[in-house]
Image (tube, rainbow, N blue to C red; front, side, top):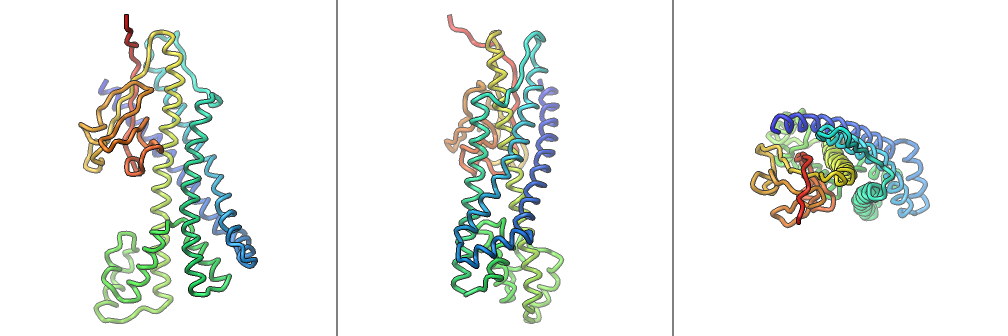
Length: 327
């Protein structure tokens, strides 16, 4: 079983990496489309009319395109799991398959798609409201407002504040500017020299460094979104495939159990470590219960709190077992 588990783990890691890369490409294109000249003209037109509500609606409507990327990861996970379960069935007269039109699978796919879009749009709307307040307070022109919206799109409100505080640190020649994890280190020697000589930066110099910091912050968030959303979609697809396969197996007195596996390294969060979730084996239809009290059907289950799912690297292994009978 250990050898089989290692093979499954490596195959799953490769699948997750591939799907994450594909999702990341999609996210990058999505951001580029929002920042395109065509989108900027649409946003400018709405702002000219004083219709900030239409700006939010326009941006949020575009996020529906994420459904396609989530579906791709969902199907990849479902197809992988169907093949994996089939390979573990000793009686080759028993067949399993996955039907994307099965009502429970359609419902689960729709749930994770709508939850992602709802959460993503809520963050975008909150950021836009924050920028709008800043625009009103300072009295920006429409062109300046469009620039602010477009260049900061993709940030959370908290990250937007971090970008503004980075600008302030550079303006005030604060050493805090050298402690930012997402700063562009190629500017470090210039910042150090400016601080040591108490020589302020020009506006254009600050703009350049802030733009680099903003870009890396957006890229970091997009990577987190790609990793977390791909994980959720892929594991959800695997779970739905397993539930469908079990319907076939049950007719032959067989069922599925699932085992939670962490990466078992120093990066594993406490609740997922061995002795907690790691190593637990439960029936397919049951939920894992974290020490935090969260219930998860699989790693990355979006119904659980984010502290249990963001950047989770755990995975499930499934085994075919005989059903326990009571007489």
